[in-house]
Length: 266
Image 1 (cartoon, one colour):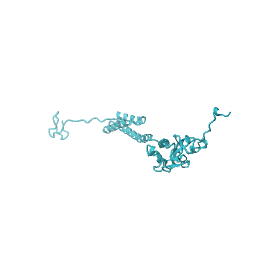
Image 2 (tube, rainbow, N blue to C red; image 1 turned 45 degrees about the vertical axis):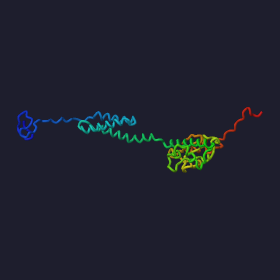
Image 3 (cartoon, one colour; image 1 turned 120 degrees about the vertical axis):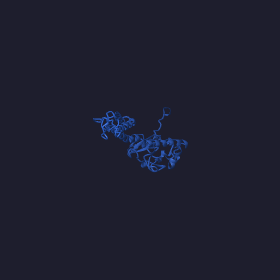
């Protein structure tokens, strides 16, 4: 047996060269894989989960991401056996899906400003009713109404519109309700009590200072004397016959009671 290193002939069956002690055992190289690399099962599952994530609001992306990384590592370690295209593609799909869907999901959980605004005005209406019950059925003076209602509010945020600038955009009191009584109003459900304005704290006035901050600057939050609140457009306020800024609007004057049969003249 000829030594591959020094060329000396050695007896057959020897393990080492008698001259240079080099190994005479011939180690064959492992067979090289032939053909196109195959797609691993991990990559296939990861790709399926990446697509399924769009139907499950991203729930399938967590296990899919783990399997995608494992498939990618497997493909890089055995490039001749496994194809890494599908593994990397699944990771790209999941990352893109997270970047696109995450802001949408987060915004869906946010309360729209107009809803918060309506809740604020409802809180003002409840506080106003509590104040009236404590002060001989009279509403507060218009000059400092927000300070008078302050002890009845859960927090100061109820005075500020979430769509406006802090320190400027607050709600205003209908000036015609200054020290009035709910019992004297002819139509509380139609009488404006609070509305969006841009005058600061203790703002009061009428329709001329209403500010439209919601719905692309086309709607204002209006609270009525009976406690209900709506977001209305300018045309709603000016054209609808069931809205008024006057507590004793002639349009809503109650009809005089009709005499009963017992009191009718003979």
